[in-house]
Length: 327
Length: 258
Image 1 (cartoon, helix red, strand yellow):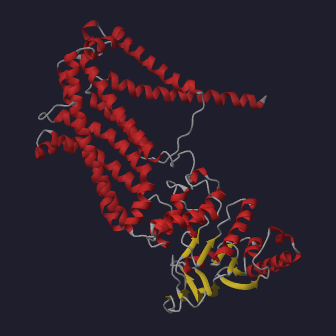
Image 2 (cartoon, rainbow over the protein chains, first blue to last red):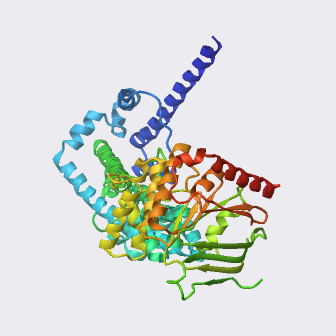
Image 3 (tube, chains in turn yellow, brown):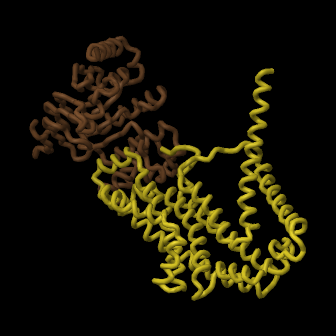
């Protein structure tokens, strides 16, 4: 009897906690969709969460209880609730004259997603944003990994260079954006530089963490057999660092999307990307078009995150298992 | 303190001695004296086991012999072309298959592809992992990982084999089976072995000579020649002679410890 009594409240509490978590996630999504501010703020907030979970790549996730069906149905139910909330705001909260602030879902579909010229604009902007994002990300990967390799080779290098990686991370990027435009012009180059600056730190810190994560015993094995620094780096440190490196790529890919949008909002020359388009639609009060662009931007963020997650799994999934320590 | 000498005598081919310690001492930077006055001689075909309580400096012996950590004073002579070192942990690289792990040391030593392939096939066969070449370490049991680790060192065909409590983390059944397998490798290759353990029974079973070590600072308190020959079977463990010798070693361990 006693055990049943103590069991019940515990289960009850768990369910409450789960619901609270879902609601919190739900709220974050609502912010992105419902924000009347420029969309970048919402995206930054959402990516900020990814950074928070991503900087500790080796932390194991606790498995939630519940069936597989529930795992699929629960998020769908939240989606349904969010769309319901959306309709409620459009039709119950907003007066007809103010509905451009939050056009109904079907209006977003018919007036933007099914509208040829609008989608052409969005498609073109998406292409430009993607090229800026990946140009910036590629440069950040090259610089960031080189930076980390140098730091991994000597303690003095780490001591003298790591503080500047941290400093880079601490400077609010928006403070540097005007200067970047001032120095590098207001087109492609400047946009890419914003992406590099914003995406660099997770790559530097994750690569360094990964290179340093090698077991002492494995290092001694290489010591015993006279391995050179290069051999050690290639055959031991880099393979061991792969899980952390890919976690860094995934975070930085998302940040690079943010960088491309931020750069767009500030730099008005060169080929306009999604950020410019967002700002245009906002200033012209084109609600459905604005919403469609926000959704496309969000999907771009998701897609890069998923692609890099998948690439990481492809690279290390065979041997790296978060649920169990390998030999 | 005199500077530690570490040398390879020029008479490497004629002398079968592979390891020699003379008055070796080791003091750690924090002032702890780990070893003092250790003398040790190991020839090819000798299986020398060191038993002692945890923290008595047993592993330090191996680290000095392999030059992972140099002696503070005394003379260390290593007369081995190649040294095998088997850690307590299998230290396999988790992203490499069994075969690739076994080939690692050959790669580090720049061994030719063909001879490395042959050596790794033979080594895998010798430790009984044939058929498991493509598996990753995480797909292996603890005993199989240790076999792979042994095979990895075997590819070098070492003259001197250092074992740092290699079977300490395994269950007793696996451990005794690996004892027998290691003994048959020893019979086949006749390397010189320095084997660290804290199991008296394992020490007596495996060795041609058992050294008893005591700690603080680590030094050798007793030495026993084991008269059981090279063909040993598990039944040996239940003979009165085995029990008598194990009793003497245990006694020396307790004496040294008090």
